[in-house]
Length: 165
Image (cartoon, rainbow, N blue to C red):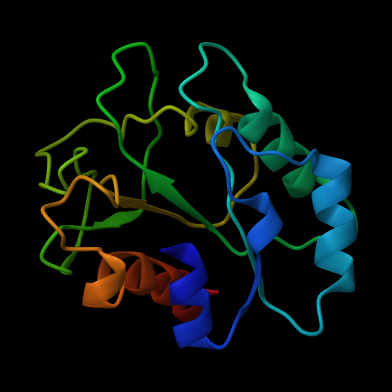
């Protein structure tokens, strides 16, 4: 999804960062970001639902704190994790592609209040990320963000970050 969204938006995407959990460390990802032909660069992280801080969260924290990297925003993916503290989001893109205030759930349905809960989002509470946009789980929204559908939800979330940065 993220790779297709990056292609549609003319961004560079670090495809080697994809995986569950994220297969590369923060230092490895920073080196790949620096080698990208142009900016902005999209990086994907995940921690496979590990309790505590997983490899995706560690990599994200490293990237966000690196002095040579300017992070524009983060797309926070919701899950049904009860263990997660969750994160406040500035806005979310629901499963219908609508931009809304507040969080969404794993299915991309708007929540009236609260925090976006997800396996890899708690680390965002400790980082200085200018804009956090919530989305449902791309594979769990009844096809709303499928590759065949053009990854509309992920693309819209990234567009919101780009337009507001």
